[in-house]
Image (cartoon, rainbow, N blue to C red):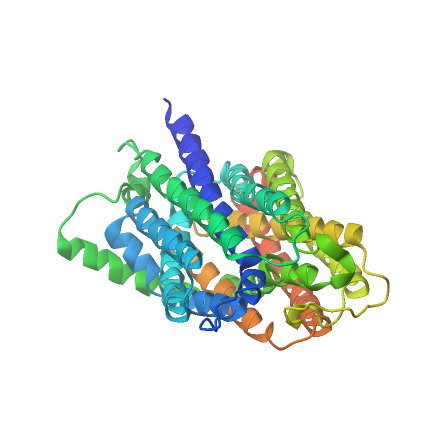
Length: 449
């Protein structure tokens, strides 16, 4: 197998592994609050929103040390161990208890930071400036396929149900735990790069190899990775991209946790309200897959760079927010177990609700594929620290959003995303224009990024 084919193979395995793990985890996040509000066990007092706030809060803090962990352990083993913790968190829902639920939330926050830092490192090392756009799109499309499979099961299994029984809950979460473990095992198929790099590429090769060296060398790499993270955090490009990243954290919370809960709380949807949560996740996944696949395949022929894709993303999201504002009751995110009978500015429409799920997924893929692409392009030599900062900002904003989702009405959540999304788009444009100018100065073809 040629070096180029081996790298593409690694990207595909990386994407398929994440697809399995996040088939389990994203389905879990989509239905968690609905499942919890249907628990008969009065000893359980957990909240799905609070759990996610803990996960993303710990996630953000752990991103400060995750580059050091990846430098010591190596990206492959880091992803395997992290995948095990994802599986343990999902397994908690089989027989939930408040203390195990929140304890698992802390551990998965740490694991998520290590997992995503290792993923960014693996993606960058198996790409170059000519393939980073394609590989980002391929990975994103495979990852977001996870939204399709798990939610398809939820749609059919919960058809006609207005209450989620203990048997329903256990069946779903046992299956999701097994799926997550399968994805974890697949990480072992990622092939190590042979030492055929040019001298200037030696460090990147060693990153993915995770080769054995003395404890002192590993500690030095860990300290160096931490220092790079701190230094990169205060560069102009990272600070500007942090606004865009903050928006992806807010809308991540909304489409992956809040919007499904809103749909499940609308009593006017009748006996389909719970199964519509699954259908919403499916169309969200369709939007993600379409965006990731199209933008990945077209990246080689895109002479205008990343800005048009991000512009499409913000327009699509603003349209979705407008329709959601008119279609969904204002108290839907915080409705009790009985749901809500309120009406917004139109009679709640299932078709509009599901169409908005598609738009949310499509817009999210626009932002995330281009952020992955520009980070891999700008920081090819410092991939682990750069992706750690990206996840730090994204996760801390997601944590804040999950926290206020316990209290804020729908209109205020939408307004926050509109404001941050507007400024995040402008800051992304600024960084992209600078990247294009630097590329032109080097005499490279802008369409290659």
